[in-house]
Image (cartoon, rainbow, N blue to C red; front, side):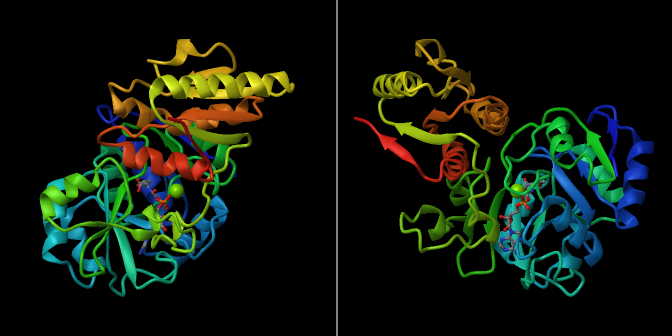
Length: 350
Ligand code: TXA
Ligand code: MG
C-alpha cells in the first residue's frame, strides 16, 4: 500500500487529518508522524498485532522493544506497575520533551510492544502534532524511529517516504524536526538511574536534577564484550555505504590529516567525502565536502547528522572522513551516533 501523505504545522494543525490518523491507528494501521526528536512510526501500543506490523514494516528484530508515547501525564500510571520518586521528578521537569523513561510495565502493555521485557519505555513528546495524534488514537502510540532498520533516523517526512512510503498507511509531514537525534533514555529499573541512550538532555543535566545518575557501561566500555542494556543500542544500527572514519585531535591537525587522506584516496581513483563544519569547510582542497553545521551552535550539528549521512549514501563516495564533534552539551549524543555509524573507526592525531 502507498502511504497517504498529509501536511500540517504545529501552529496550523489539520484536525480532520489527525482524526483520520487516529482512526487508522485504532484499527491497527500504521501512521508516521513528526516529534521534536525524529519522525516516529506509530501503531497502537496496546494492540499486539500493531506492534508486529511495526517490526515487519521496519524490518526490525522483534526483540528490540518499542517506546510507548503518551500525551497526558495521567496516562502514565495505567501502563506502569510502579513509579519511583526520581522518575516523577524527571517527568515533571522534562515532559513533554525528549526524554524516555524505562519503568516496570503493567499488564496493559503487551509483550509484543516491549520485545518480551517486563519493563516499558515511555515518552511524552512535546510536538503538538504528535500529541494530538496520540490522543486521537486513544492515548498510547508505540513508535520507533520511522526508518528502515539499519538506516539513519528520519528528520524529514521525505526520509520516511524513501524508507517506508510503500509499507504504511499514512505519513504526517510536519516539516523538519527540531532536535534531529533520538530522545535520551533513562532506565529506572535498577538502584540508580542509568542513561541507556544519550540525547538532547545530557547526563550532566540529569545529574544536576537527580544527583546520582550513571551512564550505561555498555555505552562507554572499550571492551566490546560489555553490551549496552537497551537492546537497540547493541546493533551496528547504521553503516554508510562508504567506509566512514572519524579523525580526532586538534583542529589544524584534523584538517591536515583529512585533506591528506582525501588526496590519497583520489590518487587511487577513489572518491572521498568529508564531514566538515562551517568553520573548516573551505580549508579542504579536495573531496566532496559537506558541512554539518557550526561548532558555535552545536544544535545545528545534531540537527544535520542523519541528513548528511543520508546525503552521502546518495553520492558515489568510497570513503568518508569526519571531524569529531565532542561539543560541550550534545557531544555525547552526537558522537554516540557517529561512532556507531563508523563502527568505532577512529584515527587519533596529535
Ligand atoms: O526520540 C525517540 O525516542 C524516537 C521518537 C520517534 O520518539 N523513537 C525512537 O525509538 O528512537 P527507537 O525504537 O528507534 O529506539 C528505542 C530504543 C531502542 O534502542 C530500544 O532497544 C530501547 O529504546 N528500549 C525500548 N524499550 C526498552 C526497555 N524496556 N528496556 C531497555 N531498552 C528499551
Ligand atoms: Mg531507531
